[in-house]
Length: 400
Ligand SMILES: *[C@@H]1O[C@H](CO)[C@@H](O)[C@H](O)[C@H]1NC(C)=O
Ligand SMILES: *[C@@H]1O[C@H](CO)[C@@H](O)[C@H](O)[C@H]1NC(C)=O
Ligand SMILES: *[C@@H]1O[C@H](CO)[C@@H](O)[C@H](O)[C@H]1NC(C)=O
Ligand SMILES: *[C@@H]1O[C@H](CO)[C@@H](O)[C@H](O)[C@H]1NC(C)=O
Ligand SMILES: [Zn+2]
Image 1 (tube, rainbow, N blue to C red):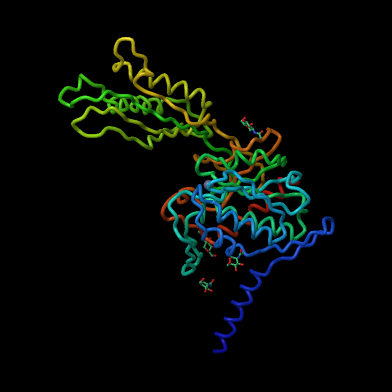
Image 2: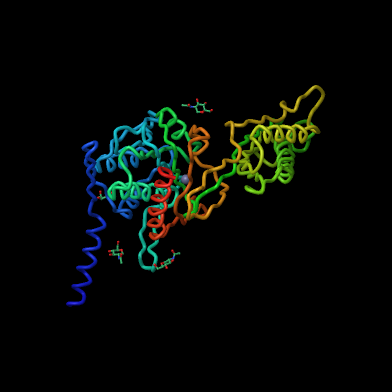
């Protein structure tokens, strides 16, 4: 009884301490902040709210409210009116525009939603749920890191602003909109799952949509038609060969093509009139315009045998690049005490207009390998380690 009682008391004391808000009063601005240190609670609350890209409103409202309750000034920057989607900009000082360091991540997730689960039956408590890694696993430690730095007097209110954007997983409309906020930090700290390492760069990205234009006919008389599927198969074979022959780089390795989506045709006994494919290219070397030119060359060559008199390649296949794309992105990694890695996924970094003088860092807990999976999980210990990591990076960005 007695022993149990003591344990219970200890447990309660520990919980109370973790949840107790830290008071921080800044004489300069006479601003009163009630900064939470409850990392796991903040992460749980964020991860519990479904925020699949397009439906970020609720998590945005919650995040804005909690930051406001802690004493931050908050602006909701509308990115889309209907359905309402907005970025959350928060700053503890006089103005976000004067903040020297911007700390940022995204609040949308990929589908489908998996509910939050905290499992502390193992030595290292494990947290499950969509977004637990990507990227609420970055958002919560970022807020706690900034709160700790303020409450311990290591930074002042005008040093840092927080920016949480929508739409990272669907092309970055949130971060592109954030360019209009006129922020001019000397450094931006981006949060994404990097396994606690500092990312020295990531591959570039280019999307291609191919639409083959066929002519329907009876399958017994295929010479009367033109199979859009046959056109597409040839085109895709050409692209697969191209992907093996593009320049490599020591830093990023090889450029990869993912033939991620293909559709076409109506039945086995009909020559297909329509077929289309979407390809994602992760660029290791060279510019998107170089890759685009190579793609066009290969596709046009691949369709030669389908061209009847007077026809141009464009008459049998349409090549569409939905966005400009971008080449490999080099990222600052000059903070001492971190391992550096390169990653193959895209981020919001190219969507935010930065000059060469403005530094950019990419860091966060958890692995990209589980991030978009049905078993997205993070260890509680990784979240705490990230709180330390973000503090080091922010201090380096301010003073280094
Ligand atoms: C999380 O949400 C609960 C329920 O609304 C609230 O009591 C708690 O204070 C929140 N914790 C944090 C750290 O936001
Ligand atoms: C484990 O989690 C349960 C449920 O959240 C909680 O009641 C318990 O105090 C936790 N134990 C430890 C050791 O954190
Ligand atoms: C699990 O926890 C133990 C004890 O706290 C720690 O030594 C170990 O590094 C942790 N493992 C992982 C994978 O974090
Ligand atoms: C950001 O850069 C893009 C591409 O160069 C440009 O189109 C856009 O106008 C810029 N936005 C701002 C606010 O500077
Ligand atoms: Zn992400």
